Length: 476
Image (cartoon, rainbow, N blue to C red):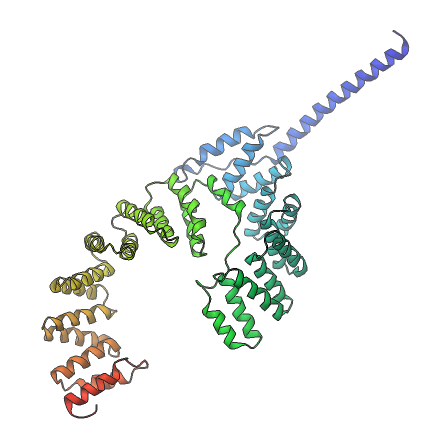
């Protein structure tokens, strides 16, 4: 073997040894770094959140050493996020930024947690990263615009909202955001134009109509402002933009109450369709939870699937027979479906399961009165009056029933008793005047005078005046 060959072989051997040493050093360094950033398994939450502890433990075992199982790390992070274990979710998402750097969901979700915690300075670079990794995801641009607007970076916010419109022309949330940018910059007419575009794109979007009314006020157009206010749906508050990446977290939530709360929020934001996957997931976890069946029933009814909604509400009542709210909701749906026989059955059962429910006894009184069962109706109304002495509807109905039964003295006794605690109630005074005219009671003039002095005039006051004059021969 010549000298040149020996030198070449030695060089190759040294390179191989160096490479092996580097791999050993790199492996040790990577493991050491992973131990530093690896998310810690949260404390056990127990049976209140069924199945979560076992699922987290399984993921924890797969990410204990380097290299971690990427799918297990993603599952772990999303499990923590979906179940409110936010410190561990933050650790998991930060680790995913290194392990899976090309996936836009991780910085997006980490930013949403940090924003919710008020750490917008940490969230902003993550939101910018989302738009770089996933430039075609409109929600990424929208969240960036919202963050920039919060810190008064109006130009940057406008740019982000415009990017949303490039991907989704006519997006009502982006138009609304641009209008807010215009307002922040003092451009009232531009804001008005954006908001008018938003109301055309979605006439039921409450935030746009509400803000448009304010803009019209500032522009001095009071009539247009009033018209915009009349068009506001719901309570006029701003509805958040739908986030497809957030909906994916539903499958990772193991807490039925968290899912119920989220579903209620979606319904409150006039987005009942978004509540369905949340409720279906919750029912997988807790199939015998009456609250979930009730919420699902109401949600389906809002989506005009009354038959399915009725079925869910019946299940809810079967699971919680003494829940007055469920029973009341079921009665409403049954009435809408014209299931009047079933209405009576549910109401009457409710007076037994909830004997102190004034609402159910009042419903029972109406049903009995309509069916001609006057004595039964009187019993229910007497109980309602006893349960709610501060209200006058039941005693007025009770007095009316007495009068219709020819039991005038009992009816007058009810009205005179109510009058002592509600001396200026219009309904009570009206009934007293009518009975006083019919029986020529000398106190009628005083009752009529008090009725006339009320701030809100009784609709049948002119007719009562004429009847009084005919009966007593003079004006009151």
